[in-house]
Length: 528
Ligand code: CP
Image (cartoon, rainbow, N blue to C red):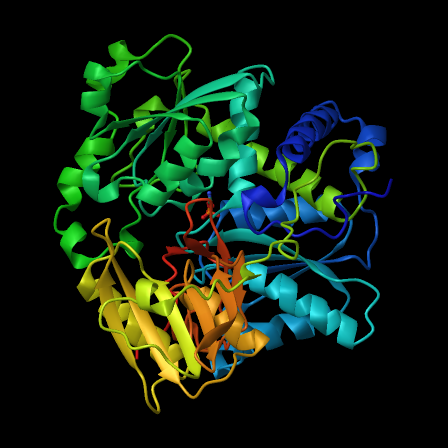
């Protein structure tokens, strides 16, 4: 079997399966031991050892640890290590990210390490640069590593955090109980934990933050869906009074640079709730370790510096682990390590097998008996029925207007109606005389904007064809929709011309394929 890691991108933590991540941690322990014991032979098993293998760092946002640990990791590999100085690059002349990275990939660069405020950037670049490589006959497609994108994810930090937790519990994957403390709202390192902690068989997570800095609801939902026990506390003080206290504490700093004026006014009060104090020491369990992705603020550290010389200090070893983890990650993506991995790789979603526009047999019962209140039967045309069944009349009316506009049904004759069924629920109906059929693309558009509806195609007073629409597994290729997260690469705000794409979640909502922002099927369409 070929090396499953070779050429892979790591844009979100779920890009690697649980088994792949467990394998990664074992390999990291192996390499770390070899380096500490100066075992050159073992180190060479991991080394890329190719001066033409290009590893490129592009940091569009500040960094010390991630950037420098990656640079040191890349140098370990005796590879070609480069850095794009973003402050003097042509990005500042309005060049798109796609053009910039396409060109760099043409210069024999195989792995890009990218940090940016723009969420979903590496995912977009991995698609775009693959097509560029194909167009230009390049023998490889570049891989992308997300080194942190806005509030979204920081998957390599997740790997090094978990490696540090595992080291602390002798590589035991059976259980973890961790307290996440600090700015859980803005912190991408804690967002990555919603899926990252799945490497443990059972997980208890205590979320400690005032309401303004609490973990966004969608990440809490993901944790619960993943079977984690989740407990919520407004401050460290409340946690120590009332909680079953964890031995692993993971602190994050308040990310002032990402906060609005309203929250900044309460800065001191918020810091107080998430800063550890001397008087808390006796309340900790024996063997407790503190971790922090760092940096910590020199004036207001949430882990005060008096703790540096205590046994609580897990954050220094954690930061050093960053380099070992990144050495192994580069080795895997280069295909130098990984041949002996035999587990399951991350699943590719199979979208093609799902039919979401189903043609059904028209019943053509007596239309006198089944007619909706107030609607006269059409002789020829289309009827879209069951629109937003169960919503309020106001909601239905609003959505009917959107459907009509999105499907180009605003011109000509016809009308709309809201009726109430015998169960008391409302539903919307659109009827348009004179339309004889919808194309496949129009049907797809209909399913995307009006799922759970029926489309009747009426000819000579009879239902000639009838379709039921279900929620499509993916919605893409339509110009009049967009991700509503302004920080996303596919948002019109980014001006990068990235077409929006969404995939259906378990809850029948749609997540942006780039930044993961969850939308209802109504929200993805642009306002008219
Ligand atoms: N933990 C982390 O990402 O640190 P830097 O911002 O210094 O890279």
